[in-house]
Image (cartoon, rainbow, N blue to C red; front, side, top):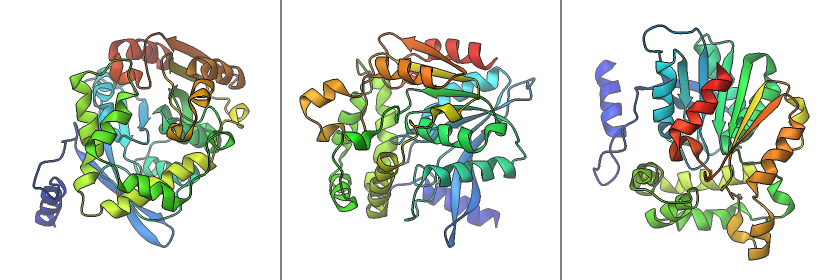
Length: 317
């Protein structure tokens, strides 16, 4: 059994060209989850606090173009502060299985709850970025008793994209996903930052691993389906359901729109205005605090980790 697991690990660490994949910062574990009529395997990192733990657990939820890997520096900070940290790759992403099923934020929330149940964790501090913010919002609405504090870092879904972004069929979305290249992934990620730096390249490399995966066709279809999930399942009409103490961390240079390439230039200036959306959302989530970060784009925890952690730790402590 042990030899088989080692072999699976070694095979899983190589892409089709024999190149080593990006190594996750902490050991990756797996949980088996029932989805529709099959069993899938979801990856996660479970990192214990360094020295004296404070008894609290933080769960980190990733965005659509990312995996648990990009939380590595935040995990490092949190475990030094005494927190246990759980960082899953949702099914459809990263080291987790990518089944062709109906994806919903309810399903991903259920999977997250099952993971916590398997680990005996009843209450958490929930920190989420981008698409993870939509999932964290849904999880908090479904399981308010489990979330002690909620942190939304530049979440997407602060506006309803289907009200202004043209509808696209799965086939159309598949065409775009199948035409993806390393360069197209990098160009999109460059839009997350006011200024690109070489150290951001690693996150493009993680996303681009799928391009050399023998199951890329399936991955492309999952990417298309999960785009539709974001498009069709807004959370922005239900902010009043969240009573949990919430911190909104909003980069003031963020202009992210899901489906932005389908908009006119005038529409691009009208929507995705995070300085406005942050204030509006703060008014709708009653028990919330808004932190506005000047000069920061879509990913504060990468662009300025020190500033992000300053506000994060002040809130969760």
